[in-house]
Length: 290
Image (cartoon, rainbow, N blue to C red; front, side, top):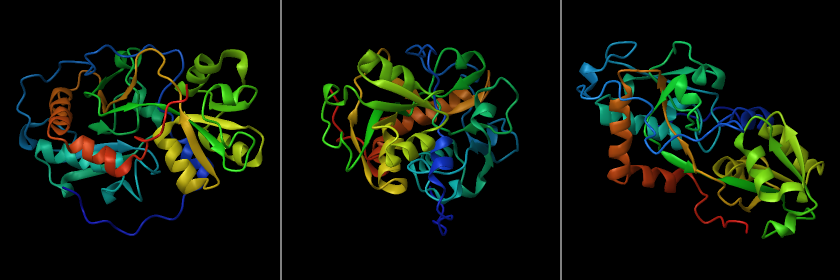
C-alpha cells in the first residue's frame, strides 16, 4: 500500500545527493549464500500486533536524504524503489502506510554496532560478512552491478568495450565497491582517480577532469538522466567474484529479522520485487562491457 504522492521536494544538489550513496566498501568479503545474517526471531508470529518494534503498532524505518532512483521526493511519497519497497514490506507485515514512520540516519549509523533508532533501514546497503558481524540483514532485495558513465560529447562517448576505455582517467568513489571493480576490470590500463563521493566524480566528468565514472549502475542511470543530463551509461563492468546484493538492515540479533526476511522473500516470490525493479530501475537493458 502506498500513500498518495505529495509535491516533490526541491531539486537536490547533485554532488550532495550522489555523495550519500555509500553502499559498500572495497576489500570487504561478500556475504554467504544464506544472506539473512541471523535466525533470531525465527518462528515468531509475523503480524504487526506481535512484532517487538520500537513503538507498538509502528514500523520505524531509517533512510538517508532522498535521491533517485531510490527515493523520489520524500520517503513518505512511496515513490522510488526503496520507498515503494518499504511500504510493500510493511504491508506484508500487516502495517498500514500510516503506521510507517521515517527517520533520517547516516550510513555510518546504519552499519555501526550501536543500537539503532529504527526497526529497519533501507539505504542501498551491500550485504557483507564483515558488516554482518555488527548488524543483521534481511534476505536480499536487489543484485547490483557497477556502471560506467561517460560524457555525451567526450573522447570516450562511443566506448562499447573495456578496451575502448584504455588510457582513460576513470573516477571511482574511494569508499565504495567501484574502486575494486575498476581495478579488477582494467588493472593498469586506466588511471584510477578516487573521489570522496560520486557527486564529486560526476562533476569532474562533466568538466573534463576525468573521462569516465564508475558507480552502481542504477545510481548511474539516475545521475545521467536526472542530475547530469549530458552524460550516459556506456555499460556495466563484468562481475568480479560474488555478486553484490543489497539488504534491509536491522539491529544485530533483532527479533524482527526473520519476519522482515520472510516479507522480502514473499515479495520476490509473488513478483512484486520484479515489478518494482522494472518501474524504478532502468538498467536491465544496459550491456556489459567485455
